[in-house]
Image (tube, rainbow, N blue to C red):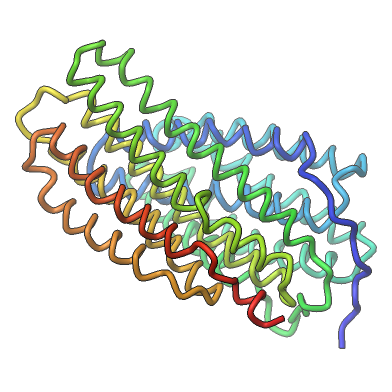
Length: 385
């Protein structure tokens, strides 16, 4: 048996944690603009690489804050330090594959290495100290690829950064294991409800930024009736995605977080799902930007495909969590994701407003049906008690 960490009091999300999350609005804006500005498979790969990098910093910092007492001065100091590094990193997204590679990479590496090194040396609880040391190993594995890639020309840089992002993604998905240093997360009274509240607020921030980005298209494209219609149609889609979680599924997730015997396990599952949720919203925002900007064109083009693929990724990610939570009402979400994927094949050849209408026609009944089925269903934790 490993060390059992004493129970920590349940607490609300602190102002410094919320401030840290708000800094990631910039990342959403920059990633969306990068994808829209240089459409193509290569740009898609660049956007995915930078998304993994950005999200890995948010994940580790947020997880770390929930392990520790954020009211400690040292914890707040480290959080503000990482926030500053993330601000520079997120601001450099648009030029990371041009002249700003070092502005992106150096803050990225420091944001992972500095907090981990401090905790590995100074943390008193052995689980927290060991987790930080494991994190350092993973940072050391990916950092050379990030740094060497920054020194390369943009063509070669992408391949070095794909390798780095793959290491970081595997670390996030596997919870940063290190051979012969296996941790016992079930021995830790981790504040899962607090971390789920962090993820809840982060999701709201992402949804809010998506709405703001879509609304800004009116200023960019002009107050023409077709533009306003496209914006309102895309707004309906974002509201549907909001409702797909906050309309009923949230209560089941919160109940599981409060009743689970493996708090770190369910938080880790939520962290992985949230990465794909963020990716889905970026694709939706990019698609809406393109469709609204070309609302009077004959065909929706690539924007029409992105417009439907984004919500498909969102619903599929949500369904994966629902399945993992032991809920039986995941089929509606999977059906919706499949319909959206099929719709994305037809959407490029449709007029822009028709592509938006197709999105809403699929999403509205799917989301209403999913939440109607969620109502009254106990979570797995509730059924186990």
